[in-house]
Image (cartoon, rainbow, N blue to C red; front, side, top):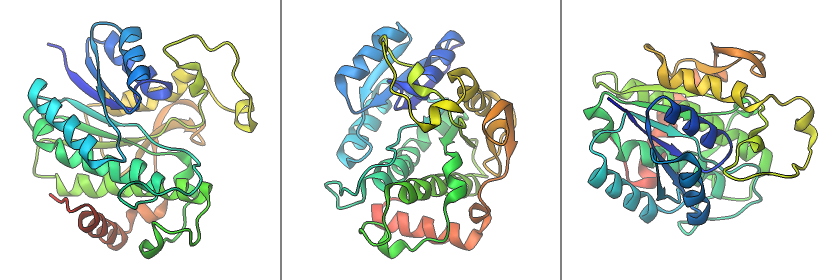
Length: 279
């Protein structure tokens, strides 16, 4: 019997490569992304077991509409892979007044996961939350300035969103202990994600990371393991074994701030109040 997975940002990069791998294993994959033309292109590229639904994680109305469509057409979800995210964006506020990387990378993942819990519970499903090596660079944070330019830089804010993603996953796991839903975290290291497109890429612009990034299969391996392993826990993150960059997937510790229960509770309470959404 086939399983059903939702992959946010599944139209290109890591998300598309994971979708392709799961479809080869007889999964039905729902691609959630905000660009309709790119979403439909990915659906056509992946074939009959792929289904595109529009999803803009920065807009609550879009998340709600996405969830309604899932509830209408897919009664059971086996995997939610929260993959979508913005990287190193200049300061910009969403229509809600939230800083854009916080809104998409963290708030969007929080909203979607909590709104799909009933669906996931029916199939004893799994939430796999992407994070990044950049979370290890995040330091102490002040929630009062989360949506202001105070202390903002594209890199530091991206680092913070990935710290928040990991903290969210672990806290969610703790809150779901009495349910059938499991939670895992994974990151792909530094990967040549531009290798994965639903169209031919004739020329890829090189950057500093090009010279030590790994191929797409190395990058998706920890994510596939987080999806398929029998026993998982958000206590540790699936990642390439050697320094989080190279090799076969293994598990490693998060940034030490992730294990601070007081900080996790503070972040959860702040988020629940900000979005008016809690368990």
